[in-house]
Structure formats: structure tokens, C-alpha cells
Length: 237
Image (tube, rainbow, N blue to C red):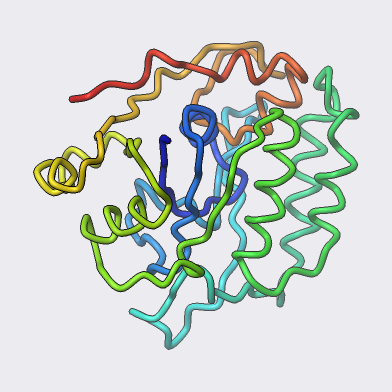
């Protein structure tokens, strides 16, 4: 059994779904603090393709006075601004002419019409839309419901054991912090996912990689799963 573990993301990119597709179980790492690294912070933001290149869509969160306490499964959304309407307008404006926009627009429009109070619920609902669209039937677990006690790489091993993993599929940054000996002692094979981003037809001239997966979905519909999959992205070192 292959297990992968990732923090929840807002309108995730293609590599996120390729890792899920390559696994049997996806554990949503939702009981840890939000990642504040600007290069990897996608819990509440992602990019869409525009005529000018790309643009961020950021769901505002309540963080004032909560430094060091922003656990992903507890983060509240700041609904003082009309961010949901703004995000949907941006998506509709830039993708309404995409070949398969109308096939998926209703479900995403409903996502943005729902008055979410917590980021975890928003991301979970968005994840379900994508998994259905990409025909990915996987077992999904939440770390917040698994009785975790450890931290860092010890936490990853603990989660893998609880899920019955024979193999753990890590992102490429895992090479920098995972204790390979610990996985060996636990009897868990360690693989890494180095996603090779595909090139595909977009709404505007030129190609911009690393967009939200809605970019591929609206442009290629049912072919999207075949396009995003990169089985060769897995390696043992």
C-alpha cells in the first residue's frame, strides 16, 4: 500500500493530484500549523491563467493575534470581504471560453456561493470536486482524526504506520529532512515524487506551468487525467 501525505491546498496544482493518483491512500496533513514559506504556501491561495500571464487567488484568513497557533484544521476564513464573488468572477472571466468550462462550471460556482467559515471545509469540498472530475477514487484520511503524537519526520512514520503503509511517497523536499534510516527500521519503503509538468493547450498564447488544476480541467475535460499523470516522476532517491 502506497501512502502520501500533503497539507491541504486551495485549488491545487497538477502535481498534487499526480501524487494522489500514484498512491492508494492520501492523508491530509491538517493538524499542523500553516506553512508560512512563500514558496510553498498554498493552503489558501493558488494561481489561474490570465491574458497577462497568471494571477493569484487568495482566500483571506483570520490570523491577527494567532501567530504560532494557526493549525490548518482550525483556521477561520475572513469573510469581511467579498472574496468568493471576486474569485468566481476571475475564474469565469478567464475561462468562460475554455472548451470544457461549462462542463464543470456549476460545481465550482456552487463552491464559491457557499458561505465557508473554515479553510479546511473549503479545501475539502474543492478536493472532492477535483477527485470526481479526474476520476480518482482514493481513500482519504485526515491527520487530525488519527491520534498523532509525534512531530516532523517521526510524525510521517507514525501516520504511515497507522494507515498500514508499505511505501511512503514523499514530495521532492523530503530528501532534505526525512530520516531514511527511520523508514528502513519501520519497514516502509521511501519513494520521492519529482513531478514533470506537462505542456498543454491553454486559453491564451504561450504556456504558463504551475497553475491550479482548474486550468487543465477547463481546457481539456475528460482528457485531463491522462495529461496530468506522470508515472515516471517516482524514484527511490
